[in-house]
Length: 357
Image 1 (tube, rainbow, N blue to C red):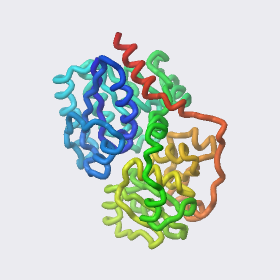
Image 2: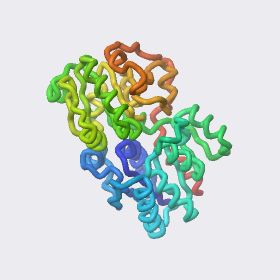
Image 3: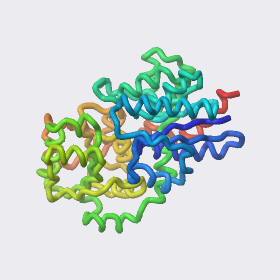
């Protein structure tokens, strides 16, 4: 059995690692890893393959930097060519990026079975390109691997048949369990940024709804500055460019760094007093480390974390972000494990093998 896996962005490199390891452990199952090039910066891409022990992609399409339509169209063309050449039994896609949508559309038009990892998430905000990507991908996929019972319920409510929906748990929880012990020595990392464990905020901002809206972007950075707390900010290339266009200079209490690898990010997350982010993956990593999180958005797909009290929404430009950042959020509930048992990757591979017989 041959699986062609499509990845292109930072969160997908993390998610693919435990699944690729699970594939490699099954005799007779092979994987062709394709990097679309959506994240082409070495700090957003190469470092993850090195740190997590993922084999270098067999193919790199080198597609990135264009509009959503340009990128998706070029990716479909490149992926279609590879699928015709490789003749996979399954195409495996992750999450909600342009790479996800391109992989799913290229496969379904060639009548190749599609499996979607992290299916069933919804923000119900169709302005978000991610929401469009995930909805279309879910409805053309053969198998939908959900991270939670809530996600499975959403898919069934949209009319997707029960036998296509499998709640396997969250592969990012698999990754946290597999690679957490490799994290960089925290003391050295914190010293590099001049912060103390339990006394700083870790922030990440990259979503289009924040970076492409000068009012929201200014509100976020004004709040980070007025909070007065030490803040470590790994800066996404998109955000860096948006700050330059809007002539926004981060305040003196914000330590700006280049994007970090998975291990360094996990070390910073685990030692933070609070995490402020618009990233879905970082929201979950905060929970895995049991660190309170503020989500800088109007909604979140990870509603379980809101319900459990580990996460709260803070709307840039509407809520008083500085006051929220200055507060000391209470820890959430620990008596529920919404994202499985850390064996999602094995369940995914077992299901693909079973459905291929």
